[in-house]
Image 1: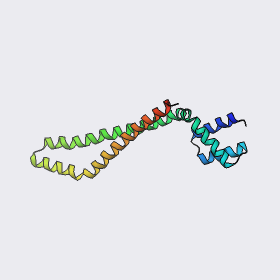
Image 2 (image 1 turned 60 degrees about the horizontal axis):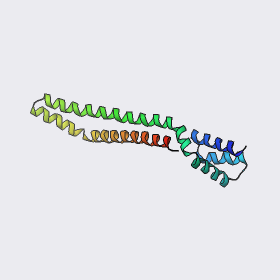
Image 3 (image 1 turned 90 degrees about the horizontal axis):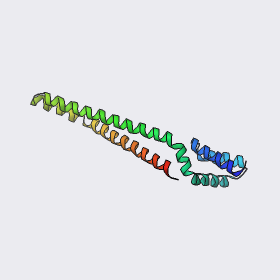
Image 4 (image 1 turned 90 degrees about the vertical axis):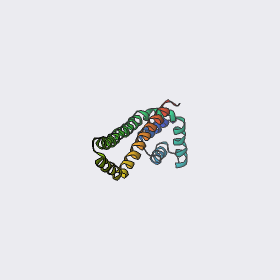
Amino acid sequence: MDDEKLRHWIEDKIVAGVSQDEIVMQTAERAGINWQEAELLVEDVFQQKQGHINRRQGPLMLLISLAVFAGGAFASTMLYQDIMAYVSSARQMGDLQAGASFLALFSDIPRLMFATAFTLATTAAGMGGVIKTIMGMVQE
């Protein structure tokens, strides 16, 4: 196998998500070289073709990032509706019942804090993934 075909094969394996050790082992077998030489070759291909690899992996990563972002946005909407239900019920009740409604809200604080943290984390992770994927796809 000539060097260019071998490099293209390595790039295909990287894009496919095959582990680096597996790629190195298969490269050593295909090219008839030792492990260290194969490892250097795989690293060299990865470094030289980083932008091309990112562009080939980009669409899937973008889809995953957008899904995480959408999940965070959906969770945010549900959290907002939950809090507004407490506020709305408190407005419709008398003072004593409103106090009870707010006590119910405070008894739910651990759940609301977890929901808020989850919402912020998923939204930020999704948006960060979108930005990182797009930046990786446009870099050369």
